[in-house]
Length: 194
Image (cartoon, rainbow, N blue to C red; front, side, top):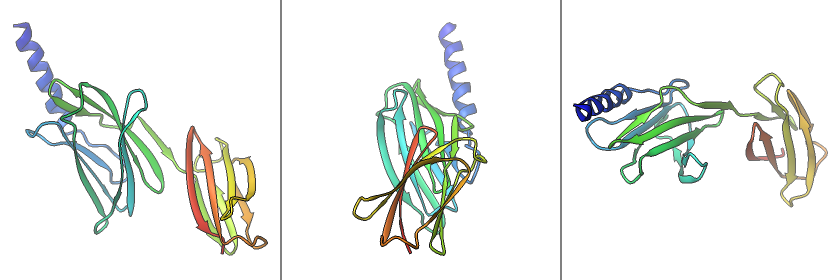
């Protein structure tokens, strides 16, 4: 009787979780029913997305960058070789990083309905010889910024809140690499100086 109750509970949890859909910005994670431990990832209106699966200990198990086809990205991940446990699927787009909990247990997969963490990325914009860095949380969290030219000569190093403008008109650099450290994350982007 106890085995039947446990099995019933596990099946109920599995069916409830099968329809789990990650909310926000066109991103969805769905467990494919009746075909093992498959998780379908899809996102709309993004050119590319970096997807990684990590263990609870933050060890990267899998990572790839997906490119858009007709404005949509679809990928199915087979977690059949994963031992029972808790994992995290992280999706990084140009604007944000979202992290979802994925549990592999009792021969099935459960995906959390909502992201366990979301982080809007600092925005880097170049206009009229100016490079602007904007922090999306209204300047509450400091961003450590380092800027280098193509010869790895440091052009700037400092911490800012809110928005900071850099005049690139007086530099001979053709390309600038900007390293942004924000909320325990590091973002790197290389842009043309002019």
